[in-house]
Length: 424
Image 1 (tube, rainbow, N blue to C red):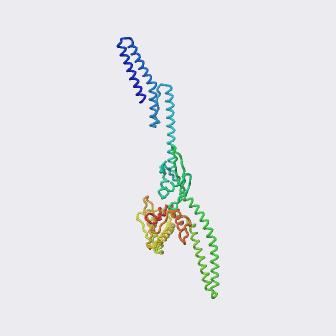
Image 2 (image 1 turned 135 degrees about the vertical axis):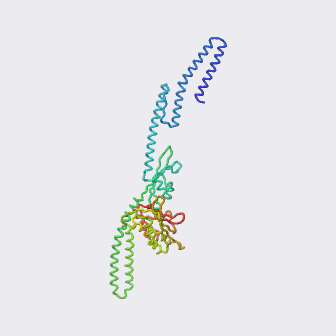
Image 3 (image 1 turned 30 degrees about the vertical axis):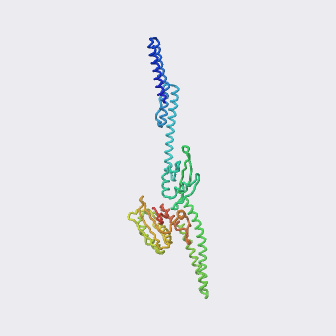
C-alpha cells in the first residue's frame, strides 16, 4: 500500500470520527458540537499541512527515481519550499548534471575508440562474454574472409599469448590474445597483423645473402674445375688407350656444368628486376601465353587447357615477369597432375572477371592435392617435397606476384581440385 493511499485512508478515518463526534454532540444540544466541528476543521488543516510538508517532497523524490530509471539527463527537480528537501533536490540536480557530463564524455570516448578500431590497419576481434564475436573491424573481416581456419586458430589462442598463422596464400598473420573487464566480466580480444611484407623482406635478405655467397664460391670453383677438365681432356686426346680416362673426364666436366646451371637457377631468384607495370588486357595476355604453357604439359604428357573470358578487365602488370611466374605455377601443376597413376591428369588455366571487377587467373590441376599444413609452408624458400626439387619455383612466383600487389592462394578444394588463384 502506497503512502498516498495510506494518507487518504487516514483522512477518511479522521472525517468519519469527526462526523460521529459531531452527530453525538449535536444530539445532546450542547456546546460540544461546536468543539467537535472545530476539532475536525483543525485536523483537516493539519492534514493539508502534513500533505504539503511530507507527501510533496516524497513525490518529488519519486519523480527523481523515475528520471534515473528513464536516464533522462535533461530533466531536473523543482524546489518544494522546504530547506531540507530543497537541499536534497539541489544535490540531486547537481548529480544529474555530472551524470550527463560523464555520459557525454563516455559516449564521445566510446565513439572515438570505435572509430580507431574501425580505422586500424590491423584486424581487431572483440569477443562477447559467451565467446562469440561481438565487434570485428573492417580489417578483421577482410583477414577472416581471406584466411580459412583463422577463426578457429584465434579461439584456440590463450590469453596473453602470441602466435603466427600461415594462410593458404603464404601470408603470415601475427595473432595475439588480450583481455579487458567490462561490467565485471572479462572479455577476450584478438589483434591480427599481416606481417607478410616484413617476414618476406627478412627471408629475402637472408636467402639472397646465402645464395650470393654459395653462387660466388661454387661458380669460381666450378669454373676452375671445368678449365682443368678441358685441359686434361685435350692432353689425353693424343694419348692412345686412354678412352676410359677421357670418358671419365668428360663426365666430370659435364657434371661441373650441371652444377653451375643448378646454382645459376638459385641466382636467378635474387636477380628479379623491378616490375614495370603497364595496363594490359589480362584475357589477351593469358591467351597469348597458351602455346608455351601447353608445351610445358606436352613434355610430361599432360593436357593444358587455356581459356579466357571476353569480359576480363585490364590490370597493371609486367607481362614478362608475370609470364615467368605463370610458367612456374603451371610447371608445378603439371608435375602434380602427372603423379596420377591412372593417366587422367590434366591442367586448366582460366582468366575470368572477379565479382569485384578484378582480373582473376586460376591454374587448376587434378593431382593428389595439398594438405592444409602443406599449403601454409609451400611458399617458404627452399621448401620442397620433390626428390629433385629445389624449392624456388613457388618462391620465385610469390616474389613476382608480390611486386604486382596481387592476392593469391593455393589450396585443394572440397572437389579435390587444387587451385592457384591470382587476383590482379
